[in-house]
Image (cartoon, rainbow, N blue to C red; front, side, top):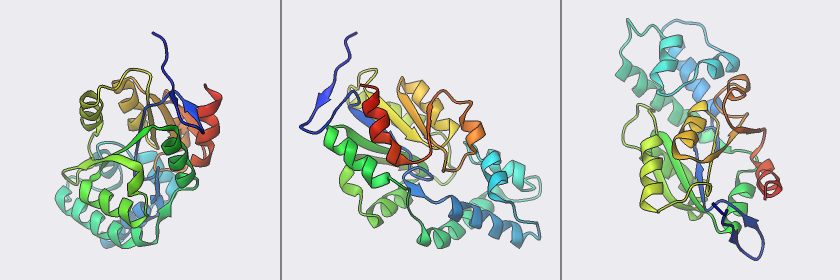
Length: 226
């Protein structure tokens, strides 16, 4: 099938839809997540974990992470989720956008692509964060979760693309987890993964995706493929 391109006076790119992850991708919040986890470990009299350990254990659904770091046989999962979210809310106040985030958002906006956030975090948290950082104007939809269990987000991406009649080859997924690459494969999209996010770069290397160290690399990467 002939590849369609979408033109503005500034850029020609093949992507009509860009699906963004929020935590660890647009929002540089890995430090806040780690700090909240270590707060909970301290409450239980346990030693803190470092960033490497955190990034080696993170996964979707998030219970996979807690099973490696906490004693889930003797701890209440709902309490862990509650404590994590309370701690994260405190530490997240100091978080900013990831390096190059606004550059990349502006690039795709000028190309005419429709940008969407699909997140495993609760929609209320994501919407407040996006508004706080002044980037709401970039997004066609913000599709967060309806619970706090940080599960799969694939179904929401599939539904959005189906409703909009997205064609194969016109979608780009940008994230920081292997799960983002899994979502891209499920919906037939290209994928770019960011090494500065929540998952360790050695795990990302095993995913079927292009790898970048900063979102500021995206414009050159996308244009070089045209």
